[in-house]
Image 1 (cartoon, rainbow, N blue to C red):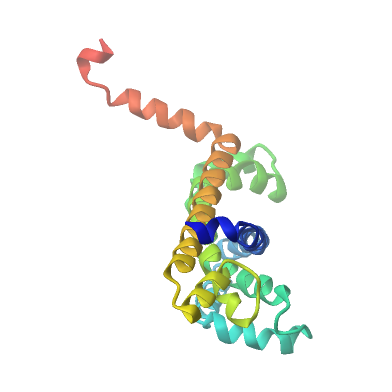
Image 2 (tube, rainbow, N blue to C red):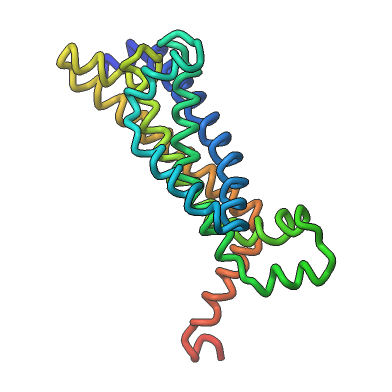
Amino acid sequence: MSWFIENFGLIARLTGNHVALSIVPIVLGFAIAVPLGWIANRWLALRSIVIAGGSLMYTIPSLPLFVILPYLLGTRITDDRNIVVALTLYAIAMMVRTAADALAAVPADAIEAARAMGYSTWNRFWLVEFPLAGPVLLAGLRVVSASTIALVSVGAIIGSANLGYLFTNGKQRDFLEEIIIGIVASLVIALVFDVVLVLLGRVLMPWKRRRGRTQRRSILPVEQVA
């Protein structure tokens, strides 16, 4: 515990950088994967290409990708942009299938009703398809969030200043406390991100919460209903 107190500034700095490196790929991955999922859902001929491309991308090991990207981007090996780009690709790969499946699960009746009301393709997506697919998209985003936070740590091997440094440095020094602190800090970040996403879901999708309450009332025992 004394090591934690003595090195609190370092831990806080590494945690802040870890959070920053996690947020950007999660947001960018979601923003890019949803349109790709919409394309895959709208044009079935492209679905297999988009989905297979995402699955293939996710099979690329993270460490070799971190090493290759500097040659493709013209950056230094220790540049955090390499990690952001790599994790964004992984986020897209994970999220695109979820996005396609979520949009495919939107009831056809709702889409037809919106079309009959004169909604344009753009308005139909934002006002009907996207909100109804929201719960599934949120579930997929929570998985992407946890995965991204875990993968950021790998970047420490190529010199990125994040919580992964505590793992590598602790292993080199055979110092278990440092490794445990890094694990706990990563878990806390993942938990905070997940809670934030759940709260955002409740704010942005209030109808889902109301529907849940309605369903719970519908299964009350008969004597309680009476």
